[in-house]
Length: 173
Length: 78
Image (cartoon, rainbow over the protein chains, first blue to last red):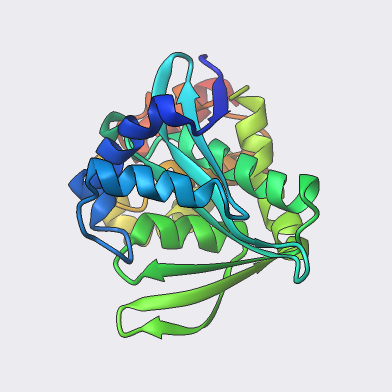
């Protein structure tokens, strides 16, 4: 079985990520749904390089699958936001996306030493809500009429991710 | 618990996590169940492991087109 590989986002794959981000199955799941131009993408990349954020591309073997990130990192408060989307539509619903999610949360909680993640998710984003529920996120209010707010603690993640991790690891992803 | 009891429990638990009635679970293709995505399959894997002490892998689980197919795999492997 091909292995999951993860590499930092750089200028060489910036256009690929913009292409993914503008696809309907990704764009319509975002809180901000406008299409991104090349100039906007370059400006965004310049901004994130100055911010407390880590952006990655994940692949299965030599096939690029999607984008994952840890953003809004506050070492003072121990908080962060995590984001992941599958750009390659052939791999929607594939295990590799779950494996990439574990990579992101493991990095934030265990490598960066952060303790709490917050998320906002559209009410109709069933896949993200299902994943987040299984990772241990709990509702903590509303961001807007159609967007909920959720919170995940490191302790809850450690407990809830055990079963997921076991299945992922035994399949050697 | 007999094998049949375990199959009945598997159906009950899959019905709950996949948000589908037990009768529908018996008739639809797994690919037509919205909740049977990557996370849904991981949860089904864990239920199978708990009930049957069998660590089913992704490829084997994906080879089952419907609930009956999953039962056939379990009958052959367990």
